[in-house]
Every structure is written in structure tokens, then in C-alpha cells.
Length: 300
Image (tube, rainbow, N blue to C red; front, side):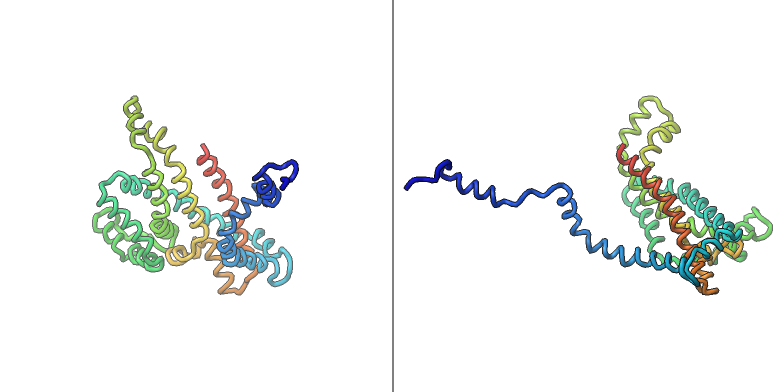
């Protein structure tokens, strides 16, 4: 029997396969398909996080009537600016003290022998696993005038009378710094553990003194962890409520406490929603540039 003209044996099947094969997907289609497994997580985030935020935004512009009167009232109030300034002051102080205290703890975990490092890490993690309310009440007992800290200071002769360590800015900063230290220790320790120790030894062999090795070699290498931890502590401190409410006073009110007061005490849902949106916008305005800095640092 004569074969089809123009085709060799075996080529007819290949040609049909080529004709029936689906066209290759482009890069964009491949990218969208790779996002398929993330759809449940994205839906969860949208329902749990975005919808409540949208509801808060609606409250700010619809309660009691539609408009921007709540934002105008807040931004025209000197008290609101005082509360906003106090919020940033506390967040900055807590971030600074958390870094100063958390840095040596992270370094100790990195260089200590195995058992000691695990013990110190367990102490840090244990403080995170303990109830936030219990830790705050513990500091309330320790810092009061008849607490053990004032008794030790008076007994040692450093002071004659108990000093006010609670219901003021000092109490807020002490309590929040203690709570935030684990959030700076963990990312810092991760960055420190990733450093090749021979790099530090090489700098010393080349004649660099310890301060130079620290500032020119060690500190730049831990900058990603330092930035991540510091940003986390600062942003979390902006919206903290429990510890400032228990260890502070009305003179040191922070924005989260002001929002709760407006909603629960005065039923001013519109003012509370507008204040929450302002806090969110400020937080994003701070966080997004830091996120860009972290990406640039990681790419270099």
C-alpha cells in the first residue's frame, strides 16, 4: 500500500502530537498557578484582618453621620497630639532599651556552651509563654512603693524614701521593655548565629582592634536582625494597651488606651475608629520604608 505523500514512517504520529499538544503557558500564567496553594491563606487573611480593618474605617466616616468630622475633631485637638506624642515617646524608649538589653543576651546565647545557651534561650522563651496579664501584675507588685525594688534601694542606702516607679512613664517603659525583649533577642540571635566567626578572626589578625571589629564588621552583619527586631518592637509598642493601662496613668495615656476609652466609656465609635485608622496609617508609613531598607540590605 502506498504511504501518504510527503511523510515518512513514524512522522505522521509526531506531527499529529505536535498539532494536538496544548500551547505552552506563559510566565504570567505559571505565576498565577503557583499562587493556587496560597489562596486559602489569603482568604483567611482577608476575612480575619482586612474586613475588620475596613469595618473600623467605615465606623470612622459613618458614625454618627457620614463625613470626615471625626478626623477633623481628632486632628484639631491638642489632647490627641499629646497622646500621640506620648505613644511615640514610649515606643522609642522601649525600642532603645530593648535593643540595649537584648543585644548582650542574644550574643550570650550565640557564644555560650550548649547547655548554658539552651538555658538562657529557655528563660527568654518562658517569659513569652507566660500570661501577659500575669507579667504586668508582677511588675505592678515589684514597682510599687512597698515593693521589693524600693525596699532594696532604701535598704542599700541609695535612696531615703521610696521613689515612684509605677503609675508613670517609668513604670510603662520598664514593664513594656521586659515584655518586648524576646522580640529583639530572637531575630538578633539568628543573625549572630549566621556570622562566620573566621571573618571576625580575620579582622583581628589584620590588626583591627575590638571596637573597630565590632563597629566595622560585626555590627553591619547583624543589621538585618537588628532592623527586623527593632521594627517589630517599635510597631508593637505603638498599639500596646494592657501594660500601659495598668502601669501608667492618665497623664501617660497611649493611643490604644485612648481608643478603648472612647469606645467603652463614651460609646464614641466614630472617634475610636478614626483614631485607629490614624494609628494604622502612621504605622504603615513607618514600616514600609523599613521593609524597603530590609530588602535592599538582603539583596546586597
